[in-house]
Length: 249
Image (cartoon, rainbow, N blue to C red; front, side, top):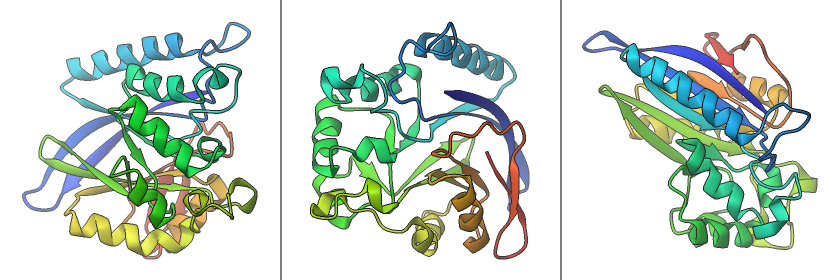
């Protein structure tokens, strides 16, 4: 369980002004509600998040809290309600948006859709590369892109999850995942059509694939990633299609 803190300076072309936004992000929580060996746990994380949010508010900064997925299966707590508790606790932590991870699809897309409907989660749940049938069956509960407006700046967030074969349910249409790298053009068009000023890819595809994602991208400004369980004390800087350096955290 990791929680990092970064500041992004969002620049809007016309008129030109800057907005400081605090972005908090967690990933691969795997229902480790209590943590282990005196470290981690949701209560401790909530304490840190509330403190950082209060400090940012005192400085006139808004906070955006993103989660990189795999919030469900991973500890014995998961089995009590098949992941419903993990979903509800995303709201308790104050997470604004999360992406579906491979462990969140272990029971298949249909079961996840049932859980999303049952828990009535307030956080935006994202994944732009799930099967069209799965997206239709969730009645809009899983989105490809969401836009958050902060001080007049439109921040677009698109979700992408891993398509590794051993995480898919090939015989169940609602378990299928499309190759995230082939969805770059589509999510960038979604962001363009939504007139976003700053575009974040919230991914659960691993850092090596995140680099490939950036290399194919023309308009992604920041990648908030997960899945490879790495601690990055400094962002990975990758060059996009236009040779611009883009941070991966």
